[in-house]
Image (spheres, helix red, strand yellow):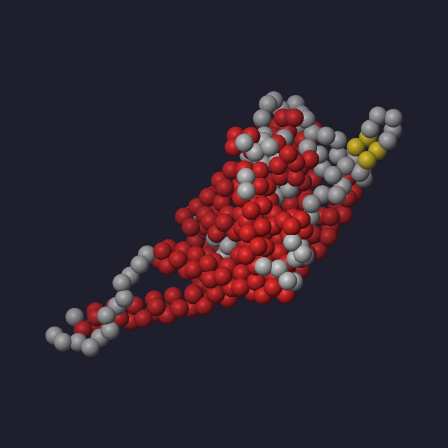
Length: 380
């Protein structure tokens, strides 16, 4: 029987379309960012090719350069994963910053007080306490949201400020370093050797001062775990339903509050590991001038990676390359270091815009395919 029905386009697995759309978005966004960045570079009287090649050379000229990139990327992997976990459930955990500061506090306490643990058990105990500290701080806004309806953005912002002051109090109080002779310093005492995370870089010829540690493979394992939880476990399915259509989730018997608490618990546990690069691989103690803002940077990296575990790993490394490029610009060009911040912002905006366009085109393609299949079924 002759028919003028539109033939359905070939069907591809959904994951192929999703990954393809994300990769295409990142590639196009990088092209847009580089073009806009080139215009800015020309305005400073520099050659875009020279500036970009300088950034890449600092990142890839030798093992040490790339080691610095991976060292920068390590805490960002944990930070972006912590943000992405809540995003999947429609939650905006802007409190990752405070959660990782509390994780540093509880980890420092463990490193100083659990020294009776033998060998590497102390290190794992410290990491566990870091996760528990971040998880406990993350549960506060979760419970407030579920029990009182308080918005997580407001409560987490407030808790970030409390966490900063709590850590400052600890460094000037119970964790203060009391040296011989009565002198004190606003930092913790040095941790014992077996509380620290071993160096990884020497296996690849990277000098020890780079501080590339085994936290990097732990971060990669965390990315795999997050992917498995979100894509293969029931809580992940429920989180995606809650994040997209909360009303349908409730109608389907899903406990929205329970899912939100679980997501905040996992997010807080991941956030607790953010500061371990500085604490257990770099310093070996908790300084008063600890690195901050890693939680907020994780939001940007999560957006850049489209809240996908694999995309987050790639985006963290890309962020590390650009951050390493700040030093290159200062040493070898007349372009200010702020150019890297501008480039990062353009990149994030481009990814978001292009990915949304790609998603809409994909949605239309699926609707057309479904309509064509239905017509064929009716005609047969």
